Length: 362
Image 1 (cartoon, rainbow, N blue to C red):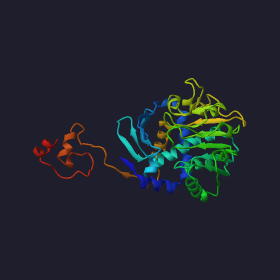
Image 2 (image 1 turned 30 degrees about the horizontal axis):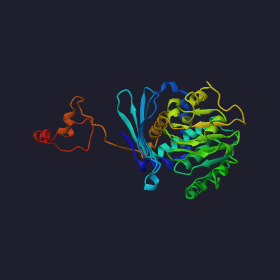
Image 3 (image 1 turned 120 degrees about the vertical axis):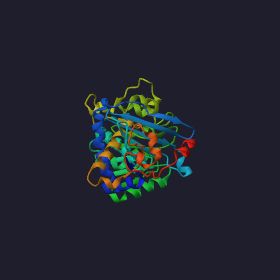
Image 4 (image 1 turned 45 degrees about the horizontal axis):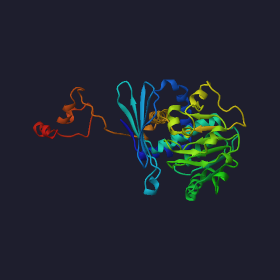
């Protein structure tokens, strides 16, 4: 099966360009959301601890199955680890065989950015020129690229409690010719913004954006909330305009709307894409995307990558991995243990063993 490790993923991203990948992924994701009813929809499966969460995110469209393993540990950077790491699998439903295993730490950053880009294209003011960002961590550059891909952004204003993180963002975006202003507070970062992106990592009910700091008519991408007890927005902000979500049952548990009653009205994104419900209805309307991340977005990212690997030259961006035991006789799995002759395809298994020596070991 195909295996995309970190070096191959980096090679693909550098060759293609992160903004080009995000743009392609936005289009692919919107097509998948347009056929929302064809997917198996289930909230992710979490395992919570005091330090963070480990999750599985599965879905299938009846032909292809995908699943992502991902963690979220906000205290990790202080201990020398990343907040989020991930890997994913793509499988064929007809026989259950996985066909792609890939790193998804980088791919998830691209996927999360693509989701924000898709929603920004759907909901943000068409003439939006200023992006206000709260949080300049590992997702921030990707979020900026996604917004720039769909709106004529001329200026980014950013605030992070760690000024070094904001300086890192400015340095990484310098080659794009975009003006990045490091603001001394969250309020000043969003004061002139047409689009606001919040992307912080603390696992608590935080308020990184206050109602009084948000002017009417902006679009907000609230990215950081993704588990129970973890929020970023002043709950009053949610009352400024319609709230849009990926999958309501999951967002009620993990999103900003966990601070609201169980019947708080929301619109799912697929409904806007298919035209079943309205998106932005006027320049003066405030729109809020309460993002938590959903498995269909991972499906879109994995299948988009898979198609890119099929394209001419795609063989440069993956290698083979001998992950599946595949005996020549499907009913004779034990025959593999007698040596390579029992395999359907060439393998690293070499030599033969004395069956009397092997059985006790089993």
